[in-house]
Length: 421
Image (tube, rainbow, N blue to C red; front, side, top):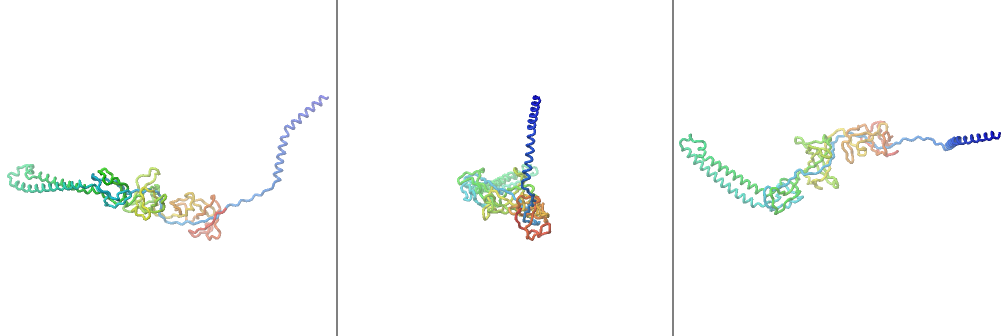
């Protein structure tokens, strides 16, 4: 009996251990969950509040259609329209050089630049005059002998039996041709001597500025010697490039008509210090190698006569070409255009709309738009922080300007407001 009691105690002890091992974790979980809900239910209660929609007060304007000339901005480089490397036409020693024949010197057409020693050519002129006199004497003498030969020919019997050669020799026809040819050769020699003497004086062929000088007084000049380098000053050219799609707006000279006008101003540190008026004269046949742009030539007349600074060769300049006249354009303040081609619109629902437009050209103050707007649109001028389509907009109260939702307002009027939100 004692053994049975011991076995029952062992069974009860084993059951208790199993109950504790498997039941205790579940009890901990149940207690934890109960405590969580008890704590959560005892905290303060929060009521949900409605988030108010952001409203921004703005300044607006109504765009108006206008007619404007297309303005095309470009950059270019100044090049001389005429660049000449002067060389001697005769050989000899340089005996005199003009003080103006130095880099930067300005010379007029026909000015004497330098002189080659003319003595040898003066002597050659005298010799050729003497040769011409001898040839003229021989020619006149032969003409006299021709008259004598004709008289003798008439006295000869059987003239009809003489050959053509016998007749020419009797009448001294070859002799006369020889005398006349020698006279012509002497005349040509004299003309050449006169030209060579004239060529000892080197003169400017056009109004020019001296770029370089290659000789000094006492130098030996030949027909291969570079005497000077000149650039014409009657006009300079601007070698500029524009996008090929803009050529349609530029006028080129046809049958004597003038091309589009252009305004040229220096760039860089001297920007805005001067300007020159010119015109487009030529479209070059090929595209620019790097940018694949169309190349134009703009002509500037009298480029060195500026009251401020002269137009310098090889300088970089800004070019503003006045193209064809276009109708139906809108001119907006620069602040009204964002990201290059986006305009903010005050919609009829008083909300912000984004509109993509075609920008024709722009400057620091304004942007000219061709497509994307109409006269019934209302453009937002205020710079809005974090703009989003559908943002609620509002005009300043008391502005006296009707919104597009309630009616039309006077074109061109603006209402000022401030950014809020």
